[in-house]
Length: 306
Image (cartoon, rainbow, N blue to C red; front, side):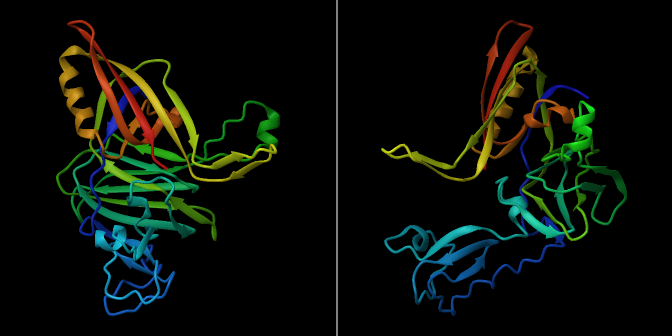
């Protein structure tokens, strides 16, 4: 186990990368320019679900920005399809399946896998050096993470499960194939919010004092009579952390941060499961402070995505 501040910029998952999935994309029918859509009717285009905002909606492509943001708004982007929710860079939009789900992707070379927004009991991973090639890495493990500190907790507290998981130290080849299976109890619903793969970059040795700050997008308002209204919304977690680095690596770290700007990434402070709360998926910013000729410091902030 190591306490390394690490950055994972995910590879893009496209139609050609997603080889197969046990989740069928049948949320709604595919968009057709020849179909007249009623108000609130829904369809699928480019793996997104769109809802018609007018009656008699015909030949208005949901992908066309003019039809989404023009004088007349024809479509509302409701979100990703269930099959593609785990690849849309939002933790709270989860792919869901009964009992288990299996996806196979061929994202090229990678050495790290990150899964977030998990709701499952078990995770299995198999990596081949090429599509249909030789298995070079496997992982199978429970997502249960309960650690009762006394008899009362052991006897009465509910089980707790990991909401995120990092699997690293995978040998990298140019044309790798990855199979991921997420499973739960028979008949239960299993979920995954993010499945990201890429080459992880170790920024430096994490310093004490990393902070995780939960935030909410709930609506909370108190009227003049003192009545408070709370409408539950989505939630996320922000994080700040710092690391000590060799000054000779400062430029490389600075370029890594520059390359991560405006791109949803995963930042981890440690690969110890006890610190999984410091594995945050979101938008990254940071700075490098050149302190001496030998040591520098990198400070990273992550705006957690919902």
